[in-house]
Image (cartoon, rainbow, N blue to C red; front, side, top):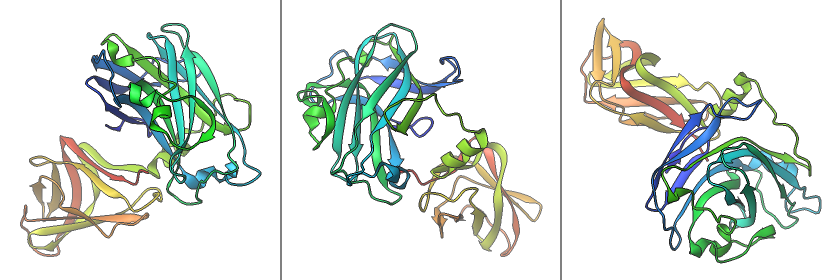
Length: 320
């Protein structure tokens, strides 16, 4: 239950397991795909058990839809999908600012192990609510399994109040029923209008900048320079850095810790420590790091801060 790639979050509540990864299996014109590989089977999805991947879309990026007005616009969701497991799958959209008001749709994988492009129509909602802020505006769910408590309702081609029985109605396949099963997704595009156009390829630079609004890796692996740090006291260091891109909101620290995972060079000496105690004075523009009690040096000595192990990982997260 965590983020995998391209801001897609994998989540499940059943007795199976799946590995999410980036795959080079892809249709022509697209280089990679999101792959789910079932590693532990659950042949009986019961009650409200489920499996899904989903993505939050920032509300202020959706203002052109004009939800809640007489000018509310329809849009089109298009994507490429592939699986050895044919049948009907569910896609559900929810308005996060409107008590999870939802749209419950379905697509069909017709041929095994074959890339198929799907398009789904998303009607405008004159009574919808998408706030003009940096919160969650819409969530798009792609389901892989759903129990009877989530499929007892009906498909909804217009926006209706949230109902748990409707939520998974489109999902008739249990992708988790065999460890031979796998599912791929790529080329997802949500665009205003009733016609799906070719996938819009952005430059790598623009794509990276958009991603770093939500998540920035500060350092990873062995011997990566992170920022400058100073001994604030004889046993505590502080460090501060400007973030590469203005983030969506004040970020939280994400780190992997372990023996000698990080190092500061000060007074020609490498001082090793396991991780940081806290993030200090964070903002959308910069953040500081603080650690106390694992090292000793003269007050005021400064030096480069580095990752120091293959397991080292330091990041800032402002995900939705």
